[in-house]
Length: 414
Image 1 (cartoon, rainbow, N blue to C red):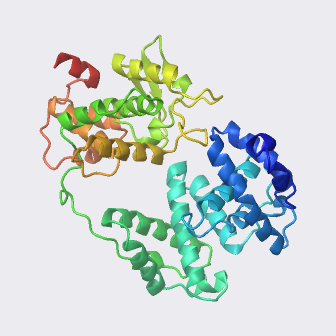
Image 2: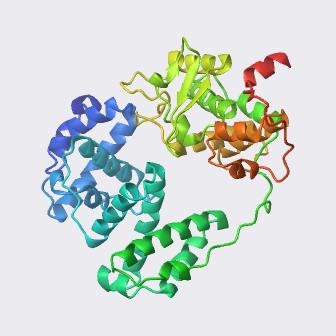
């Protein structure tokens, strides 16, 4: 494969002391992940400089490094050297898939983070997505404590006070809204209680943190007019594989009010074609949602499965179109939403597809659906969460059945 990529220079790359023995396998793996020829060649061309850096640092085998140590060889900003950055990331994924990298060396911060994550999972029973948010805040806090002084972690925690915590929150507040900062404060308070319970930090620090005030109705509802929603869905180009995938994803959102994490979690086994039902995993509330498979949603999914989904041995319905091949993350749905909004030139002020979920709720409410029915569809635990979507919703009869809107059906009637 290396000789095919570089007919004249393959021997030069194969003779690299550190990376030479791995390049053939790396190229085969990159091809299996769907990378085109040119990106692979550009990565291999960056191997000469990276190999020289390895030799200067005394690295003789990649397996001697952990993933974190290997990532150090990537530029601080990927734009400084995009090909070297891409090569390092590909090496991390390639060796990580084989389990060939050295385990990460334990540090006090890593051990504390792992202990706290285990506590959240086993004692508090938080979902995986919530665990990730809590863990990310804790990592940032521990990094902030490490950078703020030369003391050991135990000493930093014992000397922790309200001023240090406020400094961390002020730093976070520079790029977060008050609503997001509320979540961060909640994460920090939970971690401080965990530390106090184990005698690692002073007790009572959690109650010394102020929470930003957020008032109900202070912002305009995050909902679009139903005409704007229809225009957005119509603007998706279904002549490409990516367009067919995105059309099916957003049709699921505007029909059933799904979250992005729920859309990417739908598998082929969740669709009962003969029964006309869809079982949607809901990681946030840990209870699946079963809804009727509308004709337009079924047709959109079928069109994507037949003419756009990569032939990979994966059960998730929606897969990546670009390399590397694999499943989608919730952030990919957000990026797709932003891309189609830009292409359509729609005046949508929201950055994520969550507004489509709110728009569906308002649309159903105006059609006379009950708040309890709408909340059940959206996966809300309380009617209060549902009623908060609009400052003054027009209430329909409480016994009104839920009528799922069909975008394509409505377009046919127009």
